[in-house]
Image 1 (tube, rainbow, N blue to C red):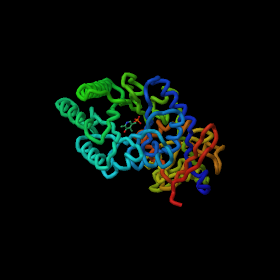
Image 2: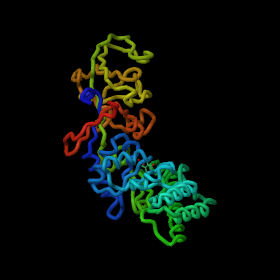
Image 3: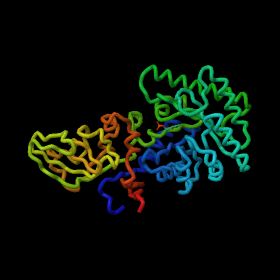
Image 4: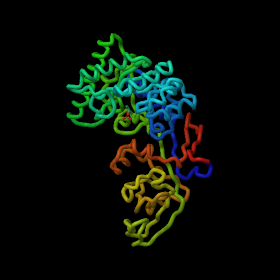
Length: 389
Ligand SMILES: *Cc1c(COP(=O)(O)O)cnc(C)c1O
């Protein structure tokens, strides 16, 4: 840890996280619960620190993608309700019950398996029913001709022994996309979801405690979809257009340092493949940041990183452990100078656009050899390096 610190590292600003959380709750209003999506190690921000911050701030629920992610939180003393959005093998039902973890039920086959296991153990598994309203991923298919069959399947699951259906949810496919067609699609998904909920509630004669569907795009744009609980991920971490519009702050700042500076004459090929050739005397800073740290290689020769003297271009191919930054007109940049890869000064939104991807992929790509520094109340409260040592 000490050895890699101040090489390349990620600063996780838990104050910004709390700020974003409070801003989002202000927008969604009282009476709407808040589920923080912390799957994939909280989009690369560190799920334990993020979960603790959300727990202290008064969030209601967390969501992860697998039982391993849920157990990581439980083992680290997170007491809040946790929903597993993805698949859990039936052999794990005992652990789900023991650790009070809520499981998504996505089809009849899973409902039957989970019910049988729960009955065998003599326990009750808390579940949220997943409805497929147009994402075409997991969930009871309820579109068009499938409506009646879908509703029937959901009612059957609710009445199965050993299962307690606390909630029901669906997921939007294009809530963050511009254009009338997308707007209509989301509206249609929402209407189908509320139709399914009403019909199921009518047939079983009771109401779900928690109906939820609003992801980042819907939280930002469609207040009518909030229902009992909102379920944002990206917005909470402060990236994307909606975060900007709402004045939210980026939680992660990824930084590196200049390890070596070299000055090359005109006509020098830089890095593998020689795709960049200097057109004048060029001052190059070698950065200890490469694709093994999460720097997407497709950004080779394409992007700029932020120095104290402004943006500087990456030259040539990004290597596994290093990359080359052109600091010819940045006299203030010296060996040891900090370079911001993304954060407040170098927008991750721009960087991800240049890479032809989305900010989610960039924060999730920060690799395990990059240490994290957690900041709370303006002070560093913890450091973490996830290597086996
Ligand atoms: C990842 C995920 C979310 C959060 O999505 P964002 O776009 O980050 O807000 C919400 N619900 C489900 C089911 C998800 O898989």
